[in-house]
Image 1 (cartoon, rainbow, N blue to C red):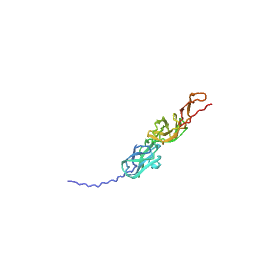
Image 2: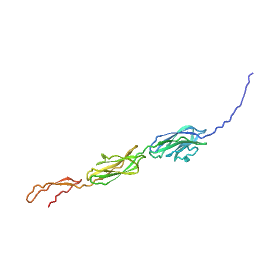
Image 3: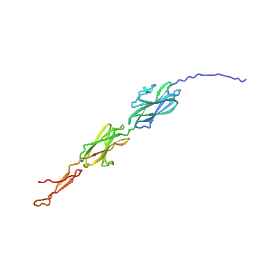
Image 4: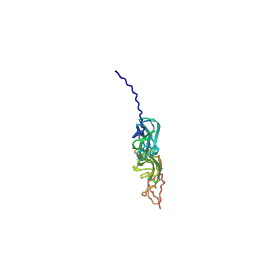
Length: 262
């Protein structure tokens, strides 16, 4: 005889909601003043997350735990709000200082609380430096002192020098002065110039981000004292003679020449 059994079974299952699980990936697109943070919600804790983002700063900190980003100890954070499931995400880390180490953690939040990924670090790139050309000083007939200011080193020590010449093509480079940090003035004495001549010059600075030029400036050397040689008198007679001389160097400008006798 066949038997038929009919059963009704039901069960009530309770799910415990927990904070999400988050991982922090290496920063990418690192530049002098910006980078991209990378995170991943690997477990949403039982419901979609309503917040996710990154905390970052120049100081390292331990895991903040169930703490809002503003109280995490990190100086900065970026956050987006919506409904987020298990997924990777990114965030723009901006207003960074050049050539500086930074520490970052990804985080996410649901109604059970906040959770943070491990801390990762990166170092921003150096920025292009800023250099100013200052007026020349100590200008004489055959020498001058070129001056400049390293106004911004871009985050790392810079090398500086000057270029000078009779035109804006310059043509003469001074030796690099090594490992200067802003803000600092620097100078270079240049001998061997011609009297009463206009020279162009500019300051230069370089670091790992590149080389930059200061503005062009000019100076004019002073007129030098002329050099003259007295030669032997010729055509000497009883009551007359011819005096002779050579203008060896005019000092940079037209000279008036003559003789004294007695």
